[in-house]
Structure formats: structure tokens, C-alpha cells
Amino acid sequence: MDKIIVLTGAGGVLCSTLAKALAKEGNKVAILDLNLEAADEVAKQITEKGGKAIGVEANVLKKDSLEKAREKVNKELGSCDILINGAGGNHPKGTTSKTHFMEEDLKNKESDFKSFFDLDPEGIKFVFDLNFIGTLLPTQIFAKDMVGKKGCSILNISSMNAFTPLTKIPAYSGAKAAVSNFTQWLAVHFAKTGIRVNALAPGFFLTDQNRELLTNKDGSLTERGNTIIAQTPMGKFGEPEDLIGTTLWLCGEASAFVTGVVIPIDGGFNAFSGV
Ligand code: NAD
Image 1: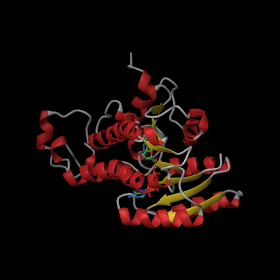
Image 2: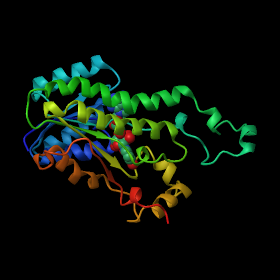
Image 3: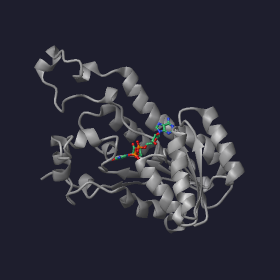
């Protein structure tokens, strides 16, 4: 492959791994992130190994910031062939403290306790914007580069929670369901242009975003961590490297007739009813 690939949120755990793998295959990669230091560090690691990469500061929620990023990518690498929309995540303000609501929860006055009734609309909005608008806006900016070219595609990052919502995280589940839905919508909308649109739906990867939910301070699994492992037929969390094969396939010519799919990469979690 010899493509120009833009990855948002690529200063983070999963997309930095994808960026390194794509650069190793001969692609030029633009590492976009709100955190320029993290983006530059990933780009540095790639260039040190002989790859071509640049770090670019970009906020996926601001059109002018993305326009600036596009100018820099166009000038330093060329026009974008492939966009990977990786920026996303959850927020504690959109998360309930307990799996099931009980009557006595209405009387719980602990400052860090959050029932469904305490969820902060601002927290919910933050999560919806980051995941959904943060996928839509970069697509509006970078897909313009793809129009009229061959071999272009967009890869969104959805999640397991898009198929069936996960307990405690209604905002993140709903926002990723919107990302999956948008992937199908855009695949249809762009079909005549030849731009393909697909998504990965990663299962459970131990990263900074979910470490506190899944592990205790001593490294042992929380109740939720144990429940996930019990529900995962392959019996383990994923490693970021597990996303590489499907990404190379969906970004390459081998998947030329594939558009509008959301692929679970989850050790069988989504296929298992629990019984
Ligand atoms: P991460 O927190 O390591 O990386 C996310 C990156 O996005 C960070 O570098 C952050 O600086 C950047 N970012 C945040 N807000 C931004 C903004 N407004 N503009 C630009 N960049 C911004 O997370 P990760 O675990 O690598 O997750 C990557 C993607 O995969 C996310 O969409 C996440 O929702 C999804 N995902 C993760 C898991 C998991 O288990 N880690 C599972 C399913 C889906």
C-alpha cells in the first residue's frame, strides 16, 4: 500500500498501534490528536524506524482546526486517501454508579454516587459530541480529498456497546450506536463515488479509559472485569495489535467490494448469549 492516511486520536493507545502498522506497510500517516505532544511522539517513533509520519494538532469537534490540519497534511504529505476516525471515548459524567437501579438509590447522598436520575446532560452531550460529531466533522473535511480518486475509504471506530448497550454507560453506548448507524448511512451515500465506509467494533482492550472500571489498584480484575472475561469465549482482553489485520484488510484492495460493515473484534463476546 502507498496511501496517505489520516488517523484522528492517533496519539492514543489503539490508533497509534494502527498508525505504526500502516506506516510499516509503506503508507504515509498523519497522526492527528488534540494532544500534539502525544501525536508528535507517535510520529517520531515511526520516522525513527524509517516510516513517513507527521504529528498534527487537531480537535475533531472544531471545523476550523480540522481545516488547518487538512492544509498541513496536504502540504506535507499530499491529499488524503484514507481516514480513520479514532478519536472517541467515554466520560464519568455519562456513567451510572450501579448496574441496576434500586429504590433506595434515590436516598443515596454520597457525593460520587450517580443514579440514572443524577446523569448530567452536559456529560452525555460531551460523549455524544466526541464520538458522533467527532466522526462526522473529520469526514466532512477529509473526504473532500477523496472525491474523484480511486482506492479511498473511511474507517470508523465503533464499539461492542453499539450492538447491545453495556451497563452503566448509556451515553457511550448510544453514541457508538450512532457511529455504527452513520457508517452504514455514509456507505450508501458515498457508494457511487467509490469511497468505501466501514467500521471496527473493538471488544474489550485494557487501556487508560477503562482501566479503573476493569482492574483494581493491585492489578486484579474488578467484578465488571471478571464478568467480561466470563462472557468472552476466548477468555481474555484484546491487545491493540489484534485490530491490525482487519484494518489492513478494510483499508486495502482485498476488501474492494466491502462497504457498510461493522466488524466485531472481540474474542467472540458479541456471538455469545452467556448460556
Ligand atoms: P485513547 O484515550 O488512548 O485515545 C483517544 C485519543 O483521542 C487520545 O489521544 C486523545 O487525546 C484523543 N482525543 C480526545 N478528544 C479529542 C478531540 N476532541 N480531538 C482530537 N483528538 C481527541 O483511547 P483508545 O482506547 O485508543 O480508543 C480509540 C478509539 O477506540 C475510541 O473511539 C474508543 O471509543 C474506541 N474503543 C476503545 C475500546 C477500548 O477497549 N479501549 C473499545 C472499543 C472502542
